[in-house]
Image (tube, rainbow, N blue to C red; front, side):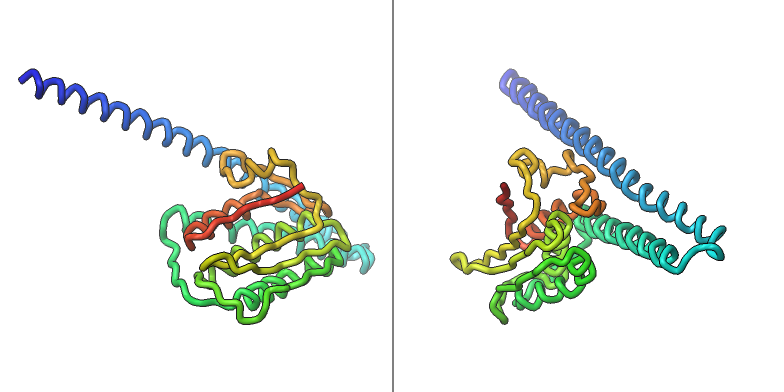
Length: 242
């Protein structure tokens, strides 16, 4: 009876420890997600404030506006709409990953073709900053991955590189065989990051909104999303910066 009682006490202690650890983890998760949604709400609100102001001007003063002014307002509306679309797209993908509902169908994919596709999708942003982008991955470099996830990963990292590279800069994409894997490198001539920023960049708790070299908006969700998608493909991501 004494042995059984001691075993029961030990079991209760272990259960209490598990409950305490899980409660703490849950509390931290809730705090992190509260902060995350607060940032998202802020970053969604800002483009809408700009949109409302511009559309009100167009609605009330369009007859007196010059053609050049209307073109300028149209550019502002387009930029705000693209920012909102990018944010919502990343948010939906992140939500699907968190719920485990994302479907992964790995197969051999041409990495060079995937990079070319992302460059074409981001062509306007590249032209606006007069950037030179070089896809140095040899054609038909095959990697085993899910095509949808791979395209999203490359597009997010390229978007980040474009955002933080000043006008007339350059971005180089290359690939290196590494044992039975392939390392894809995306290097830019951008403004760089401190080691402190690098250490925090994949942590949802430290997510923050940062403007690019041309005041481009963002939430920092893109690279966190990349890390989670890459890990779903049994890969890893690393940042080197100065």
